[in-house]
Amino acid sequence: MKIPVPYKLILSKVNGHCPEELIEVKKFRRLIVRTLRCNRGFVNQMLIEMKELGIIKYENYRLIKILKEVD
View (tube, rainbow, N blue to C red):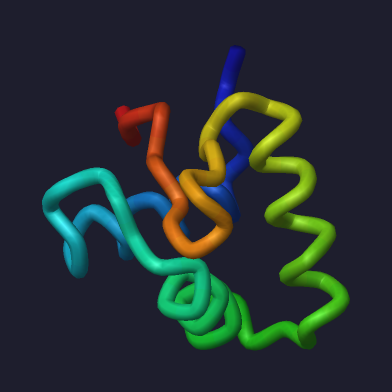
């Protein structure tokens, strides 16, 4: 399965800021908004899609674990 281009951009930014595959939800949302310049509703939809695709996984409601690496 191929990862969509906007998700690749986000994951590459996350890998640059946070080397250990865990990032706080608040920081992750802020990175999405700054990278794609979008509103909060769009960010929520993107997080849902990324979770369904198996790219991310929520850890204890405060952390997001990155499951896929960018090619």
